[in-house]
Image 1 (cartoon, rainbow, N blue to C red):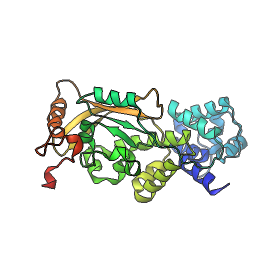
Image 2 (image 1 turned 180 degrees about the vertical axis):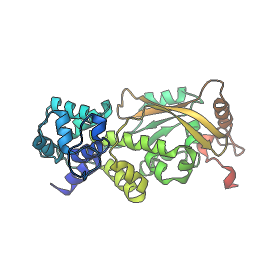
Image 3 (image 1 turned 90 degrees about the horizontal axis):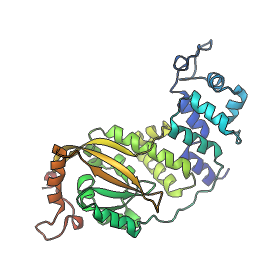
Length: 308
């Protein structure tokens, strides 16, 4: 196997890494099994116990976990998914890992936002919205999204390929973003779980491999979450934010698929009608509007109280 092939497998995670991580979550009692005799040397289910639950031979399951069985049927994979109590997203991830062949890493073309998506962004008005690429790159945002989530970042940064903001990178390496999310750990797990799904679908993505390598080297928290092999899509969830200008507010972040660019999504931030959070967003819109220098909020960085 070449170096690039090995790197591609590492970023997505080999099937054995995923299966071992999921086995470690279950105990024999959880699956209704009597524990096998002898001292348990591994956390969770043993290979023999999982093979019994899935109805396959121990030798076959061992070959699969070691990556030596490349023709596992859907029926076998479904049986293993049931034995491990995988949800639909984890089961899909298992099938992708089982079907994958070693590939060379490739430099993907730059992601760009098409005109209809930009028109959609403009039509949202004061509703915070941003376009995310498949690696959580911020491809575009409106003034309210930047003011709410990253007012300290250059407004024009998404338009520059060389230094586009990246949500995962900011979440783990930017102190402002860490402070913004009251339950930072919950948000971090969600973002890493979503990246895991993307890595399973695109193991050849050199830019994703580079991002994972960078974050693994600079953040032990990211490395630990990545090594846990949990997968989950980021679709819709509620978060409490601690904003430096308008205080604490609870928002819902929803990801809407872009029909003509299925690898992209529009993240829309909403609040409950008539809530204090809705009032906070209205207040924030004043900061995102024209300033005393005559420039619109989209053209200047926001100044927080700590900045003087």
